Length: 172
Image (cartoon, rainbow, N blue to C red):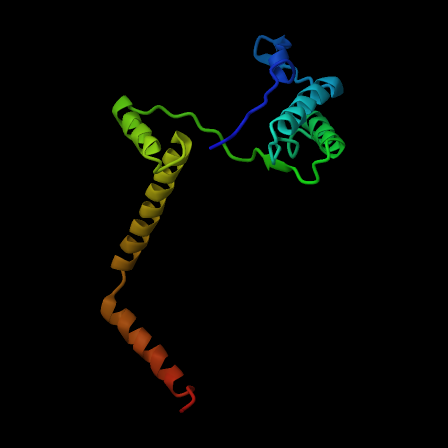
């Protein structure tokens, strides 16, 4: 995988502006400025141009943070046009981030699968395993429900339904 990540740590919540509202409430201020946004976006496009990168992707949350991330989004659009990129990409961060604890032996097995290129990264491996387990649980639930059915009764209902449909079939 050939990816370059450009990230800013001076604005947003990383500015470290925090307040205690009450003894029960803390506040963190998120600041996004046009000059700060222009600086990081300009750097990303300059880098892409200098190293002949074909694509610049912006990871944003402006569907939720319409003002602050919206400003960053607008700056990204403006700079993309200025740098002659007729196509650039957005990735809306709508995926839930989950923190988990994994036993070290299992983590080694996951890392082996990533090393062997079965999965591109740990996150993909874990997401795939969870999806497979949930799918298996759903299939088991369906099997348990089917086991509750009276097979003779279900067969007679099926035969009855089929018999009524056969009369409507065209002959060839």
